[in-house]
Image (cartoon, rainbow, N blue to C red; front, side, top):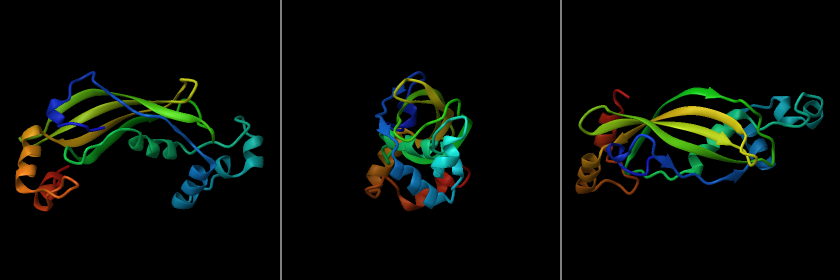
Length: 171
């Protein structure tokens, strides 16, 4: 989501996102990874007799997919700071294609080097039905901090060890 320094973002700016189809493999892999084997996700027979009539994709899996649908640049990104107001108004089913409408909602400067950008995220399926909403706050670098890191010879991932520790100390 952070594709430029936090102090160069503007409220209302739209962050481009691509779509992705959620597969059976995604759901089963997520079950293994998280231990979330609730039968609404993992048992065809139980799910068939539910109000949904079929298996659901875990809401936490949908949330986990979204960061992979946008461009991130490690020079600007420090850390995810918070996620608020997450809602799941409709289910996601195996085979649904999801994408996200993402807009910059707020920008606050923390100090001379960092700021927090708040993004409003609306996840939609292929029918443009809203399936998830949340606000994500990202701790990011300001333009002059990015330039300073480049001058210091930061690693390829955009992080300078000592600087990163200081940035996260009170996050």
